[in-house]
Length: 310
Ligand code: SF4
Image (cartoon, rainbow, N blue to C red; front, top):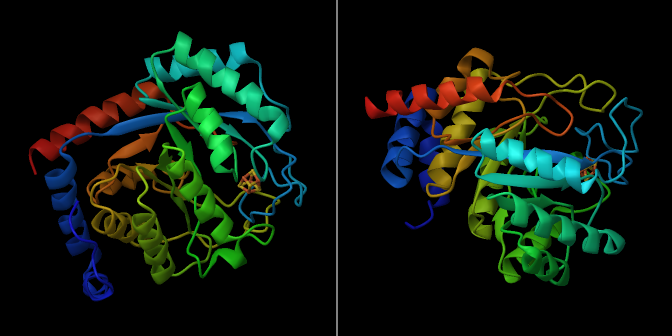
């Protein structure tokens, strides 16, 4: 680990053009992390009816959407998805459930699910179950969980514009509790919610200060019937600048592109990997389909060839 960038270092970076930032970020990626690209996959194991009001999310019970609603899927279904993810090349498989936090009555069920996946599939298991305590995380770790996923979503300053039913501080304390229980943490957020570049930088600094192990970056897909449905899409240069700044502020962590990488970046997906990204979620997202794993495998091969010739 090198020393964290100071605010004045970051101010100087912000003066650079998109192209200059990308050049620096790619050099940092290759120097610090080599040519590795990490792939992960998730399953929306329990969907909808969420008490929270995250304004981008179709699973919130505060908005009338046609997003699927179902209780925890069967163990067979989830284990089969973990096996498929492994075959598709994912190193980590995450169980995601909607809701504010880890429900005490489902903790035993999730722990037993994790044990079964670990027994039947050679994969690292992650979970994203909302707010939790150190005791919850100790139980999940004992069952075989490697990593807990809990996004900050946006900057501390902008967070109240996005969610009113829980706080940024609660999210940070969940991350700390997972770390205290000995779990790795995957945490990132969503860009394109109406925040500024300074907000994106503030989120990256919070993630660096929290010492997270993996950073997923989502780009808002404005979904119908959510309060964000008419959000103005980010420019491609704003997205590439953000990825490059994240890489420079977080030089040592996998920086994974998640929702929005196909739909919003489109033709510019490879440019994101020239801006310092080095991971992807494959096989689809919580409520949105992704592209085929075969296309992603070819894409990864081509990017690694490009990096060889940088
Ligand atoms: S993002 Fe998570 S916590 Fe927020 S409304 Fe959606 S399911 Fe609930």
